[in-house]
Image 1 (tube, rainbow, N blue to C red):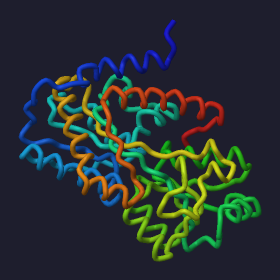
Image 2 (cartoon, rainbow, N blue to C red; image 1 turned 90 degrees about the vertical axis):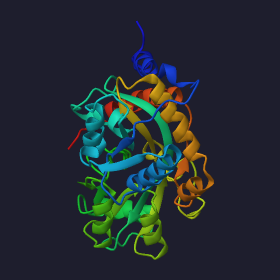
Image 3 (cartoon, rainbow, N blue to C red; image 1 turned 90 degrees about the horizontal axis):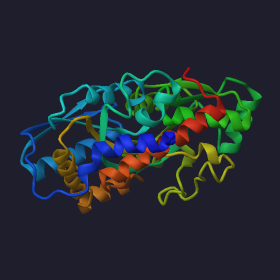
Image 4 (cartoon, helix red, strand yellow; image 1 turned 180 degrees about the vertical axis):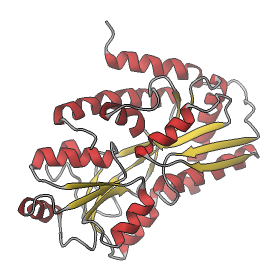
Amino acid sequence: MASRTSRILSTLLLATAASAAVAQSTAIPKTVRIVVAYPAGGVSDVVARALADKLAAQWGNSVIIENKAGASGSIGVDAVAKAAPDGVTLGFAAISPLVLSPHLGKSPFDPLKDVVPVASVMYSPVLLAATPASSSADFKTLLEQAKASPGAVRWATSGQASLGHIMLAQLRAASGVDITHIPYKGGGQQINDALGGQFEILSTNASPTLTNHIRTGKLRPLAVGAPARLESLPQVPTLAELGFAAANLSSQFGVFAPAGTPAALVAQYNADINKALAAPDLRAKLLATDNVPTGGSAADFAKTIAAEYESNGRIIRAAQIKAE
């Protein structure tokens, strides 16, 4: 019997089988809607709008951004899954709603059947920062304070079943500390409340807004979820360096389409997104905020999603993580 990974990969690859090459340009709808699965103002919204501008310029068509936030991105992805497969609707989201949320509760869509991976757009580190409500100077101090006062330290994430939630659960399990989870619907309001000191710790993806608040000293970076330290914050250790390899996670964002979208359109969208990501100004904009452009084929993106689905499932089962 085929393994779960093989079955997931087969499903996703069937949906993207024709996307490896495009013999000739395929007609793009006159108006394309990109559903962003998070609120306006966050890193995903900023990047999606920059990408939309590039695509609109390529096509000479209108590209409209529509924010549909909630449930750690699942509401936005669900809107894409239920849209007509005519190429008019695309979605921009982290892969979390496909590879995390289904392991933590009932998903409103089938992540293996209802959406098609179109293109990976970027890899985004997750920064862990102290707010004005916290006196923690470093990560060690944070853990000491959490141990001394169980439940008193509050950690805000972008939502239930989000990557930040999984990171927190992994840290809880590894360190034995009791930290209170404060879930939000996305990055915008989360940042505002962090500045107001409504909780002690913030975990969120790298963004221009976050970088600015760190530079001005309003937020203090304690650790980062990333394969290596960030060039812009070389003094900030990764969670792996601090002894929490299982919590050293980062986000991958991409574009999706409703299942049934013509393969030729999926392939054309993939080619055009890769062209946009190769533009020096867009690459520079992402890299300046520690977000790394990715790109690649739809098939490779599908393989990544399949592997992450399996990996996250193992992590969640081993740590007995539950949606709160």
